[in-house]
Length: 422
Image (cartoon, rainbow, N blue to C red; front, side, top):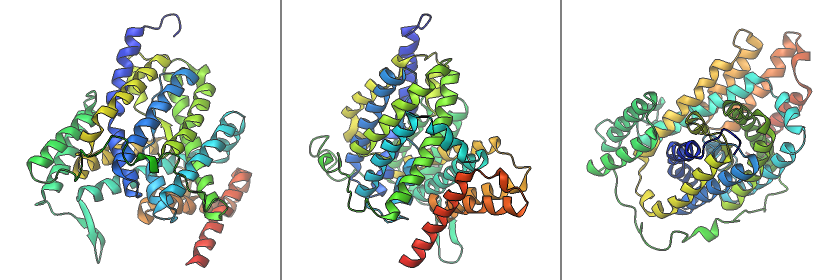
């Protein structure tokens, strides 16, 4: 703490940050479960990652930034690395560890600036918007509001289904609480949705929910990386793409949050602490971490130092006591939260320059192809390949960063690889 900082304000800011972000424990575990990881082990991994990340930020970054598994990046882990690129979740954890090591190299050198400058801002924001739409689509599917259709591919769900009713009511409650600025609004709506699901018969108690120790089954997840495909092209394409997303998303988040906290000089130390936390995330069995957007709630409440993130980390540690109860939260209570988070990510469209068609169309393709192909990698590929093509067509080849030609080539190689592998 520095002169002028108040430990009482830091304490209340840490508590507020915790309640604003604790919903991530259940939501992230549910997404990791979709990758094949046991649900309870996913909760343990998420909590350990959050505790370690917040403590590293408290003592390393010395800023009031909350570090938790990132929404959007967890979707990349499950629905792209595992479902689309056909990696096993253990192989995907190996990708996370390698990405964390490379992120640390980037953060402790000037490479973070070079890497960030290599990706045009429009494309960076388009990826965030595309992932937001993707999360929304996943939320709509999990809730049953949108279902599969043989002819049109998607259709509206059955509103006589208690799970769909629960999801719709929970979504409305979450939106109302969020726009009103209610503290812990997403957590409150998730708990209310859980209660409603059981009242309407839309959810059932999980089998063997209370059997075994909290850490039962977690031994298979901790340091459970599988390096069997560590020398394959698919593995290193996955590492490169994940590194791009993790680096420039966190650069933007940390820059804005340290500025908001009045500690811009701590940008580097915060980025470095976060990079180390990403290595820990893979070892603990989670998808990569980010400087949570919910950190702004604690900063707005007066958080200025690492004491805020320390308090939040300790509260995450206390959450281990409630893991058996978290298993009772159904998809119909989780899905609306994904929809709200997706909507928040779409806000990045305001930061984009849409007046230049050579900037608009590559960004547009990223935004629509991520959800429509159900793959963040394939969606990114369309935009990153199109960008240099349209720039060259308009005689603006010099506006394309040299590294982007290499990235576009990598995406083309990925498509060719998939074509020959069937």
